[in-house]
Length: 399
Length: 74
Image (cartoon, rainbow over all chains, first blue to last red; front, side):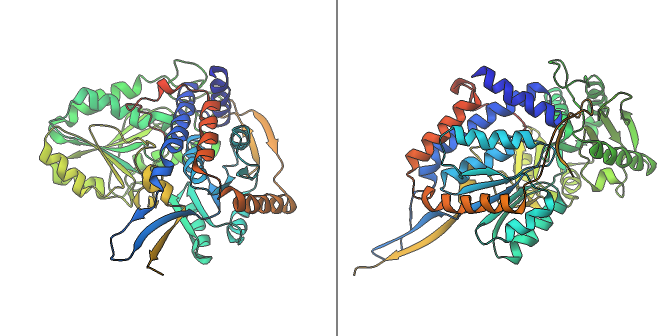
């Protein structure tokens, strides 16, 4: 078992550069989502009685058909499995168009379901270019689609689905806020802030990207955060001691560099990092930016790499205003120990997920998804498995 | 973009793949559609058995799946 887990993880690290340690964790998490849905799908999809006065009235959840899954390279196993496990348990079948840079992982996942005894054709990988996606989505045999990826890819698949009146779930970008108030455990919050920014080499939609601290603790936080970010070990993702591996593609690195440079030209200041590393591979130094102007790229866009944008807030209302001043609305993490403040964060943050005193993380037991430009629909939990079902209304009277 | 594995830590091309032809895509679509016709009627117990097998192939023991599991993944 251990050998198999390591083999999957090594392919993941080779294909997109995540640390081997985190690749192993991702494999473990895939096990978790398979078990969760194996154990709970039947109860999630049980007939749901509705009191109407009819002899019997209820909702029955039935599968839709072949689901086209367009998936990204960053969590190359996990993001496929969190779709595949509920979709297959609901009785659908899957067609995977994975990112072009992770073909071996895509084929391994197809093979996994074959080895697990699923019918041939239950889950198939399509090694195709992005250009083919719309044609496949338009095929009448394909019932619905799901995409995790960029806004642009989401728009294209969303339009493609709309043209054919097909169900679509979109999990797109995020620029998640990470808010720290004076009542927080600052040391724990700061350590978690580092992890929340750099996991997966900074390439996660739910990574904390905008750090927003109350001004009374801002100086201390910035000092601690800078120290911890500067101390991270960047290097070979196969080395157990490596904290941050490379960006997954040269293009990703080429996009990140000007985003940081232009933000600095607009007036931001670099506390640490701010440069690519002078070595082969797509390596970028963990970076902390402060004094970020509102009209800069770091304020407006999602920086997809190990770059943290740090802001200061006058009070909780100001912290929430800064957090919500983004077109994205995926996750949000708020750190404080006052219950009234916690309620305010829960109610007022424009996000699909709010975590209090914890970093945003996906979990197969609870729904995952965003609002605004972060997409629509939910994955995981009982809501996730119902996305790709026909919620059939049934009304039965005495014959 | 080419369909290929390139090690991002070194820039080395590991393996490249030819995209499926239209005919190969058609075979896969037809297979998916045909499979759905029967698979949709399989009982939950059968699907769950396959899913548990998939979990075991991933190679992690049940003990490692604690509720406090906190990976940031995606």
